[in-house]
Length: 194
Image (cartoon, rainbow, N blue to C red):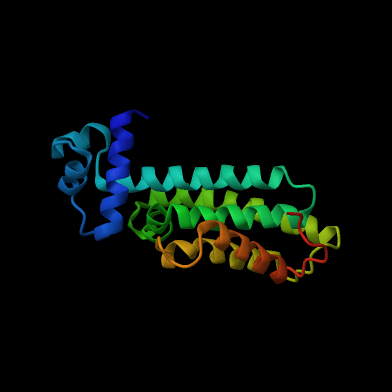
């Protein structure tokens, strides 16, 4: 993806965050990117395509981030803590994009929603795998892995809804706190390292 397309995506993220998807026009996006309105259409056919590009990129980054966090862990507890800390911190550090990626989903076309849903299932799969491993090892006490996965991911995603810079807690503190809460939720029998 070229520099101009990335600039348009950043401008769209700012505009969608400030005004919401429906109230944002391609003129708003172009203006924020320093382009003419026609310049948007050189790279994206519509503002919905811009939303999709943001959503797809955000979900791919999340999936890759969680896979990396889990892959370096030596135990399920450490893996789950790393996932929750990383995902929560990301939603605080990138709260504007996080809000768009998570809460503007309904404005995507059915085809684009399907792509994003597939990515969400992959993200959930990373967490489910860690939970399954922890349950099998006797490290976690979880009756319903699917429901617990949803609860853990919701806790992380929700950070983007309420976080604003300047609040009392830093993104790092939020991540650490959510990791501790998540380990309690799964009844972790051995504490995560670090």
